[in-house]
Amino acid sequence: MKFNTKTIHGGQEHDPATGAVMPPIYQTSTYAQSSPGKHKGYEYSRAANPTRTALENNFASIENGTHGFAFSSGLAAIDCVLKLLNPGDEVIAGDDLYGGTYRMFTRMFEKYGLKFHFVNMEESANVEALMNSNTKLIWIETPTNPLMKIADIDKISKIVKRKDSNVLVAVDNTFATPYLQLPLDLGADIVMHSATKYLGGHSDLVMGALMVKDQQLAEELHFIQFAGGAVAGPQDSFLALRGIKTLHIRMQRHCENGMAIAKYLETHPKIAEVFYPGLESDKSHHIAKKQMKDFGGMVSFKLKEESEAAAFKILESFKVFTLAESLGGVESLVNHPITMTHASIPAKEREKIGITNSLIRLSVGIEDIDDLLADLKRALQ
Ligand SMILES: *Cc1c(COP(=O)(O)O)cnc(C)c1O
Image (spheres, rainbow, N blue to C red):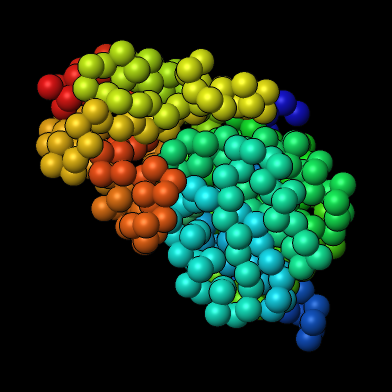
């Protein structure tokens, strides 16, 4: 099946009990057994639930994996990956990460004996330089949040595996989605999503996903998911599955609108810099062009007037864009990273990588582009 068919049919069967075309919401925690241990494949919903299974099979399908896992949040999915590791193990991660990922790494897992290195992954050699015999996991986010940096998944995977084939490469594919890039095909072992964002697509649920293509890795992750317990519920699983059915057409419009807005901002006299991998002026455009089908709906920019007051004035003036955290829904959102999504990153770290007072991040929705451009123009006046 091609991608645009997989979003709708990938891993799906009609309900065996009734023929229902949409998977029923199996709102049940437990399942009757005819004799102790004799059941129809379901015992208790922390281990498996049919609605979640339908979603997990779809997750696997859209990322070209063999196994998918649905979690109660994106961070719960990352937490599950890190629990594959042991005290003393080291992780190499990008230096521009979703704030909650950075917080989990440094404030939760460092105290359990994991060591984290943060590097600019635009240069693949930076990863190689930090590898040693304790390295067990490479954590790649591309494009990054909020500076839209691009890491070369294929190149990094090859470098890492050549040095040590046991080191796992994981990619947070939240911003790109499988519509734009397929990390498992590019050599990664694990794909992670905040399904809260584009996969769900309607800002109506919080969920995480993992996809893999290796049986043993799948078994280990399933054990941690089951033993740790951060599973997605049946109602949310239904909503996510419903959302994914339109992922490809939503993404097409997100990309069109994202590009139009990035181009408009690039010429605006009040803007100092636009971060969008689709612009030819973007320093990582050549890598993005190689590994992504298009460039997505996330656009960040900095003002010439580098002040919080200037940014706030603009942020308070939007009428179509909503000032809110999160991204990836059908509606356009605007965000001020340093006070909102990235407040958990220490100021010194933020400054070092360029998350400044005037940085504004847009999640460009699928509304009419004329209304979005008019709203931006008004807000920037
Ligand atoms: C939102 C987000 C997360 C965290 O996911 P939640 O569903 O909020 O727990 C992780 N990575 C990226 C890139 C995100 O945007």
